[in-house]
Length: 256
Image (tube, rainbow, N blue to C red; front, side):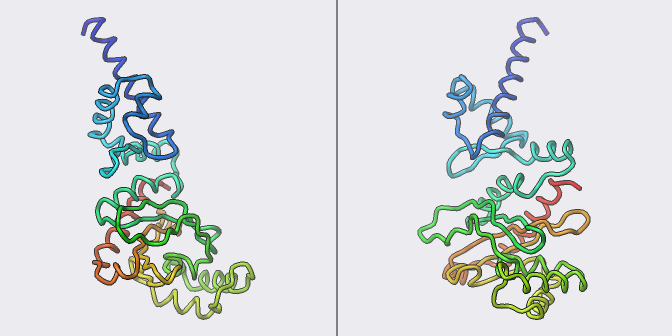
């Protein structure tokens, strides 16, 4: 390799890394035009770099907008380096994949001290009828999307302890007693996903699966949110299977 060719190769690698860093640092998915302006590259060069990274799964592209976000390969590498990545840091890429597969709004939530769940990320889809957004909701687990299924993953003693604590806290208390929470959680044991019509809003149906780490600790949930009218004709089993698959993928990316 001649000196000129070597210099061009190094420059291409540097540009590729610049694109990767810019996409990873963006607060939301980013398009080629914005990348070109930010990095001072031509659109053709930016597009070529993005396509190379896309082919290697370091980037992922939203088919609706053409914008880019970090891909699974990048998250896998980061996970090996830091040993642990939180739910909120890996959810966006997986939610976009869920939306592509089923064309329904997908969301992810993080558990807070095993008492509450907060929806921290949501990716919508273009439909004439949209479900009410879950983004930012923070609810006690019995009222939260997938919350009872998270409680169902606890052993008997731990479930009784957590249910009593939730029922006893004024700020978390809903309409359920500790015994009712326990009974509803036990009824879901063994189920890989839950289907919740009318929760947390009367006009939505939520399908969710818990995210478990390698020690079988519950970290959060991932799921779909549909308007109840559309849910009546939807393939809920397929939606549930997608939730289970995404929850497993998310857990594997977060490491130990």
